[in-house]
Every structure is written in C-alpha cells, then in structure tokens.
Length: 531
Image 1 (spheres, rainbow, N blue to C red):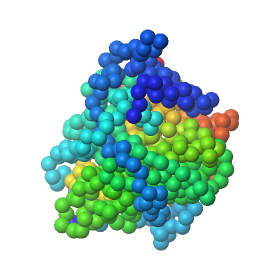
Image 2: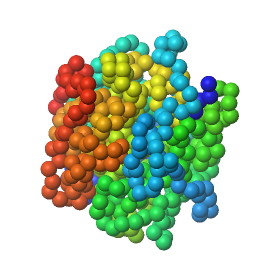
Image 3: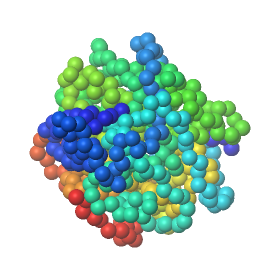
C-alpha cells in the first residue's frame, strides 16, 4: 500500500535574563546558574576558570550536535511566504475547533491515512534506522542555547528491544544509572529527546539564522540556512505582555495575552484525511537533506518521507517564530519569558511537542491530544487488547506525523526505551495543563491519565508540583472545553503568565466506561528528590 551558539559568557547572559521576576523561571534560573558554575567555572580578572565535572564535559570535549547549516545571508524579504495551513481534527467522531477558523467538513479525519497498517508481529522486530544529518557548517555552542540549555550533554538514544510492559523510569539514564540532581535532569531530558528523534519524529535541527520584522500587525520571520530561505508569518492580535501561540489559529482558551498563531502549513502540509508528505513543502527548501522518499511505489507525496515526521518540523517552526518574537519583543511590548502554546487534537500533539522541545515556552496547554500526545503507546496498546476499544496507537496513527520507520512495520511499543510520559516530562519544571475527554474513546484517556500521573513525578522530584495539572472533567464534544477545563486553564494562565494568585493544584481524573485508573502496575520505580 502507499504510505498516506553560546560561550560561557553568553550562558551567563541567559542566566541573567531568566531572572526577570517570573515565578515560573525560578527553577530554570537555578538550573542554569548551577550548570554555568559546573560547566564554565567562575571567572575573575585573570580569566575563566575550568570546571571539572564528569557529568558535564568542558567546552571543547563536546561532540557536535545534529543540525542544519547556517550563516548565509538572508534572502529578500517575503521570499518563501505561503498561505496558512488548513484547520481540522484527528481520529474518529465529530470535531470541535481548537481555534477560531472553521473545520474542514465538520468531521475528524481518519487517523490512519491511506489504508490499513501492517499488523504488529508480521515482520521480525528490528530497531529503526537512525535519522542522520550532515555535520553543520559550524558546530553548535558547547553550552547549548536558550531553546535547549542541555544541548551540550553527550547522550544517545536508548536501545530498542525486550518486552517492558511498564512505563520506563524517567529518572533512569539509558545506561541504567539513576539521576539524583536537578542538573542531571538536564541531560536525562536530552536523552529522552534523542529517543523521540530516533524512534518517532526524526531530528529537530539546531537554531538557524533568522531575521524578524513587525509591521501592520504582522510578524515576519525569515529563516535562512546554507540551502535556502523561507518566511514564516503570523497576524498578531490582542493585547497584553504575555504571548500565546495557537496551533493554526488563535487560541480560544488562553486569554489576556497577545495572539501570535503558528501557521503549520508554512513549514509542512497538514494532512488529516490522508498521510501525504509533499517533497516540495517549504521546510525542505531549508533542509533538503531531511527529505528521503519512502519506497512504496506511489508518488513522492503519497509515499512520504522516511527521515522525519511532521511533528519535528512543526516544533522547529514554532521555535523559529519564538526566535522572531525575541527580536521584535520591544516593538511588540511583550515579555518573552511568558509564552504559552495551545492546540487541540492533532494540534494538541503539536503544542505538546513544541513545549517539550523548546524551554522558552513557559506554559503548554495540550488539549485532547490523543495517541502520540499524552497517552502512553504501550498502555494504549494494552487498553485496546483488554477492552477491544479502538484507540489511537502506533499501528493506526497518521503516517505523516511520525517517522516511516516507526510505522512500517509498526514498532512494538513494549520494546521502546521511552514512552510519552517522558515526552510530557521534558516540559518540567515549566508549567503544563493537559485536558482530556473521556467521551471520545479514540483519545485513549485511561492511558493518557496514567501517563500524566507518571510524568507528574518529575515535577514532584523537582519541587514544582504546582506547575503540573490535568483535567478530564468534561462531557462536551471533541475540543469543546468544559467549564471546569476553562477554569483550570485560566488558573494556569493567571499564575504563570499574568503573575496573579491562583490555585494550580488541579488533578481531575477521567471517568470513562471500562477504565482502570490504578497506576501501581504501570509504575514500578521510585521517585527521587532532585536537589
């Protein structure tokens, strides 16, 4: 079938900018300050001191990270501009809109795309090939960069194989050692990133060169690599010093902030009723090396891309929009330490990946994300086997969103070294509020709930439990938030974006037919205190 860069002085600057009075930035500031001391040492008039820490190698001993090329002069303003992507939903049943634009046909698209996926077990279990990128023209900075301050960690993906029915230990490095400090979480977080890139979405390239302008209420961000240039645009509306980036349109849940929507189709096409991945998507203008046609005998668009899934590209695009906001923040009058992302359904996954992969996002609102979002791949498979309920899982999700090697043949979720409680945990210690909907069986909310409970242990270990919440209390249609959920999101917005007092100790579990919410069988590890 057819497949449907920073030196130690700059790092101290990040530590300084992180201290701009935000309650949310306090734990990040502590992490940054500690890593600066460990990796850079202290400086006096005689010059910089060197650090001696086996966990965090000194600059110069760090292997270059995977990434794209940079350094070419920007192309002419406006080059590469495309129209915004198309709205829509995923899964089964009727679709509510996470944004203001109308739906396509008023229905969710079938998530499987162009035909039945191969059954698990038809082909001997093999680890998927790694996604490789050519070495960048200039290696990234040894100390990381604002969207990933742990990029300097020398880590690799875990091994695929075995049969682990439980949720992997988020505190265990891939070599089996257990982390014990908040600083070590920075490197563990980057191990999870490597797992996601290896097995699910492909690499997210390092930050390239950007040049932003703001005029007539439009933000334009020109992104340039050695291969070419594209321009991302966003029509800015609303008022306030905080920012909310809605996925493919304005957020209808986050209020009191500037609306700066991300137009996903300006990076790669949004495919809902099929799994098309056109090779002429704008993203491949700047990263042609990330396109490799899958060998299914159809057209390049229907065959799709072997090297990345679209959630990698969309996360990259959201980060470039944030780069642009950083450049024009004074003109806009916004505080870029107060950025939120919000999306629902397939766009809920988009917001979740964005929040996990960019530390500049202060609040992630992931609404009804379904399989590939907050639910655990392995627990969704188990729920389907136990109840016979059709839920979104590895062997029936949309093929354009994830790597081809994850889907054909579908990976055994019990053999993965990671799961999606760890995708959620990558946001820690920043704020996240997850919304479910047990009336929509496709979303696999039993699995999503257990995944969130497991992820919450990372916030507890970091002493930041008030920055984590979930609310499954709804009987509304898909993507139509209930009064309880609106109140929950408002609390997180008020506290972490508007600096107001609010109770964010929110834990409203689902109440679905046949649900077993006992997490003891899925969590067989202990939660440390990360000092």
